[in-house]
Image 1 (cartoon, rainbow over the protein chains, first blue to last red):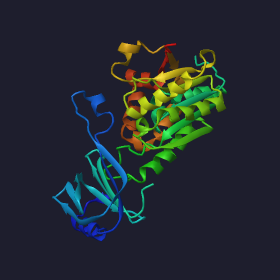
Image 2: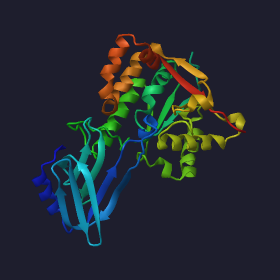
Image 3: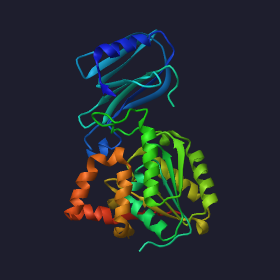
Length: 115
Length: 224
């Protein structure tokens, strides 16, 4: 993955419009956040291989970035995105990595199911 | 002194769960001729450290960690490594009865005299808890007279308060190098602190040496 180039990601989001896709969306503070700091309120979500089809895909912000997908009857968005890659399987992988390189969010789109 | 066993079955959910608190015990057992099977439920797919700049993506991390797990097993001398194909952070959502069935089959096949896993209630990560619960459930199905011993790893903040001091303390200083090699094998998880740890070990920092040379377990206490 490399640091997000907004224009490139915007073009890629456009290429995925109006197709049946699989999404991986995840946010995390790590499973040990509350173990290390009892005052920390840990929350996160994970969804993998849900089917999705969107008509508008937009990247916003100046970094870290936000990505929103407008679907026929709803929305998906993620924030805190810093890195991206179009991998060898043609999947758009986006992630938000903190200063120490720890993943805080993953947002990925693929035309075939993720393994 | 680490007793010889007929067979030892180690069951943990994540690659690297064995490295910090158990790898010296495993290496010693194998060195002394006890066969050890390590069943690892997931590939640590949800590991957070991808590096910055990143060395992995969400999709390549499991492949990297699989190789690391194989390297770690080799460092400890494990010949029977079983990767059970579960997904990281989902173990607690599986059917616990079926998970226990899987462990029961393994126990029937291997007939271990000792099983090492996490102490349910005292092992913090939901996958640790779920794994420990299912292991205890599977062994609890056996008649008391034929149950293998269960040595548990625990590290919740309240574990000593509630369980007391660990009753099993292994001096593994003779295989400390193998333990370090096991930790090093899990590069994606340990690279950030290995150098610091090795420097502190070289400077004979007592806390670091204690962690490198001693491994502690609680014998599971059955209610029946």
